Structures are given as C-alpha cells and as structure tokens.
Length: 371
Length: 90
Image (cartoon, rainbow over all chains, first blue to last red; front, side, top):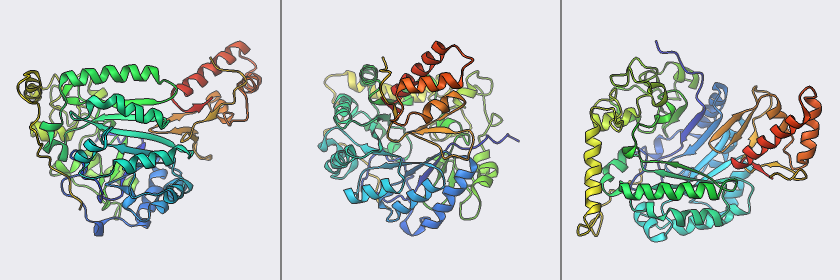
C-alpha cells in the first residue's frame, strides 16, 4: 500500500466545458461535457466545504469559461466562505463592470486573464473568436480595482516571438504577475502539435528575453514561465506528482488527478455526488494508481531523480510511449527519447532551410468546439 | 533600500488565512507561505498603518533576548523578500 500524502493543496474546479473561445491547444478533453450534466450550485458548494476540511488552501475556478456559469458569484462566495483562496481563470467574457464588481464583492482573491496573443489578428486565429478587444477592456476595468491580476499567455511557435509586446501589455496595465506557459501537448494541442511547437532558436531567444525581463521588473511584476518539456533534459514533475498536491473536479463531478487523466484507459474515477472528497483523496483507485514508486519501471525505478520529477507525466507516457507506467519519453534517460528528438528534428530542420516555409500559407487548425 | 518611514501593506490578492486554523498562512496567487513565530508577527503588522520603524521596534520588544540590530536586519530582509515576490506594497 502506498501511503496517502497529507492533503491536496489546490482544488481545480472545472465548472463547465462551455466556452466562447475555441483555442487550438485547449486543455479540456476532446469529449466535452454538456451543460445538462454539470454539477449544480449546491454540489459545488459542498465540494468547496469538503475541500477546505481536507486542508485544501486554494480553489482554481476554471473551465471552459467559468463566466458561462450564471451562478458564478454564488460559487465564489461559497468557496470563500468555506475558507479557500479563490482564483478565477478566465478569458474575460461574458463580463461587464457590474458583474466584475459582484465577483470581487463575493470574495474573489485573484483573477487570471488569458490572452492568446499580443495582437488581435493572431488572437482571432488561435482562439477562433473575436475576443481580444474585450480582454483589453477587462484589463482596463481591473486597473481601478483592488484585486490581484495575472495575465496568462499560452506560448507556441506563432506567438513566442511576441513576448516583448506581451510584457508591454502587462506593464502598462500594472498587473502583479504574468505567466508564460508553453503549450503542453495533450488533446487538442497534440492534434495541432506540428503547427504549435516552437523551434530551438525561438525558445532560446524567448528564455533570454524572459530572464532580462525578470531582472528588470523585480518587485513590480512576478514573471513565471513554463518551458516546453519536449526541449527539456528531464521531465516536469507533472501536477507535483500524481495524487500528491492537486485534485481536479470535472464539470460533471468526477475527481481526477490531472486534466488529461481520462486518456489512460482502465482508471476508475469517483464522483463527488456519491463520495466525499476525503474518501476520494485517500481511497480512489485513480489517485492510488501512480502514487509512490511501486508502479515505476526502469530507468525511473532506480533513478536518483525519482522523488523530484516522479517519472514525469503519466498521460504523456501513455500518449507517446503507449504505456502509462513508462518513463515520460521527454526524459533524456528514456529509451523512447528518440521519438521526441525525431519530432524536434522535423520542426528545426524546416526552420533552418530558408527556402522551405516553416508553415504552410494557411494552417489547417483543429478548433475545440463548444459542447 | 527600504525606507523606515514607509508603511508596508499586503499587496492586492495577498492575505492571511482565516483565524482558527493553525498554522496561519499567507495566501497569494499560486502560492501559500506557512507563517511561524516572527513571520506571522511581522505580516500581521503590514496593515498600511505601522511604519517599518514601528514594526522593528515592536518586534525588538517581543524578541528582547535577540540582538536588536539582528532583529532589525532580519525584518528588513524579510520585507524585501516579500516585496520582490509582489506580496507587499511598500
């Protein structure tokens, strides 16, 4: 038996899969939940209370687009009353100033506003929607209100060269934090990977830009970044380790150890309508499955880094190595690392030859639909 | 450098966890800081009312066994750290 970790620190609440945007790298599953199956206000309120009792500190209200929930003010109030720190991860629509004030009055601590690009044109292409100007309006409203604001930029080949302009948006809006998160390749992003993976040259330039910005803006803006793990030497400690720090609740109430866990067949998920959160955290087979080290194979099993990165990401191991218990193939020690190197070679050789366009004139994006 | 007359205040989105549950935590975007002993006593006073000099003087009283200059130095270092993390407005 693997010992159960103390308690999760954050609860990721996917309130809905409905969304006015259709981003080509959306982290939602490819099978989206319909509105009719979503948990109701009372269900979520109970989940927040149980989470706080379990020791959870923060609730991340996300989606889809959480603003699509007409009861969002009540949900924020419920989470805050339960004792949680409330983060809202949003695209900024549908929203007006009155509703924003209501969210803040209900106890919202921190608003994370997503941007797809520094320009309206590329934002429209990536999100399949005309929403960039509304985001700038929301950013303007936020400046006169006392709330923490993070700008989230999901980074990929098409926008990685815009980091400087993205920082300018953040600076002029005086936000306290910016996140540059390179796309992670699951679901929708995996389907669009060829067009999204940055080149090595782009990545190196972006890292230099970020480092200089971090120094320049210290004490004014906290800048955090997530590098694309395909270029890393060792895998990321996905979710801080399986079933160790985080718990995700889907719109219909299933408790998952991570966003993508459904791709691993044979996992049994418990639902918050039928089991309490503590019981799920302690006993749910899905959370037990990759806890500790017993499930590990070589080279992870005897690796000195096994307590640092926990073998990387189980979903990526499944998607790229065909085995959820394998070492994450992005690891340089993985026997399957060559799969990743071959993908990178394609991206980087196309980039080096000046006569070959890196991308076709028109990309055939696969857009995430609305459920 | 931190001005001894400035009145530090927790930044927007940074707050203490609700009382009643130990240990008390400083909650902030994507982070939480466990507060023990002097760190709680310092943060409790970052209310936009106390000056840095007052915080130092009060903590020197509480920790009267420690060298006063060491207490002052530790507090200023801690406030600087919180400011760099965007947890504190100075």
